[in-house]
Amino acid sequence: MSLFVAFSVFEVCRNVVGVAGNIFAFGLNLSPIPTFRRIVRNESTEMFSGLPYIYSLLNCLICLWYGTPLVSPNKLLLFSVNAIGATFQSVYIILFLIYAEKAKKVRMLGLLVAVLGIFAVVLVGSLQISDITTRRMVVGFLSCASLISMFASPLFIINLVIRTKSVEFMPFYLSLSTFLMTASFFLYGLLSYDAFIYVPNGIGALLGLTQLALYFYYHRSSHEDSREPLMSSCA
Image 1 (tube, rainbow, N blue to C red):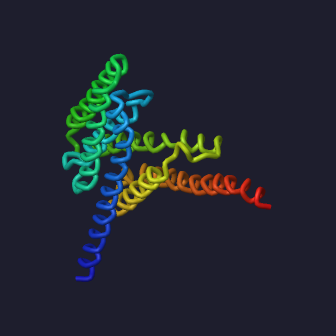
Image 2: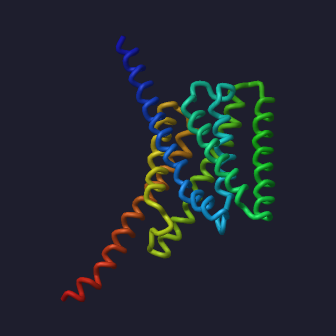
């Protein structure tokens, strides 16, 4: 009886952190809305790039496929978070295509076709692997590599913050949402005994924590710097 209770508590904990990860991911998916509000208002993509949305779509599709019963059983929460993410990215890409200038639109369409082609190859190719364990390993490695490369992208922003000593280009709520989401799925992966989930999300959580630490450090420094002239003038 006690073993059953312990197993039930374990399942509840895993589901709680998985649901929390979905909630934080939803907030993260909403973060580009101000950018697209500006694009729609100005009827132009201006200097914005559509590449992050294209890459995010590919990442969501591969991770979504990993979360399906055909690859990994009992990963419904992983499937749902990436299904929602793929939907958001698709909407952003469509809006970008509507308002992009012709040259940028053609380039984006080419990249979109390439992404869908890559995903089709992954999907069809993995289905040719009859052994479910091998199939899970192959798709798992692909999803893990995709997630790590995506979570590594903030390294550029981290470097920029350190060089400029400014957090202007590192929004606090975006960094916080990234940390909370990756930390939740890191725990979800640990409780699921799935290295393909907890390894990349563990890396993402560390990078997210680094961003938050830098934000508070440089935000405080800039705040102190801004007060220094006032104190001097009063003296």
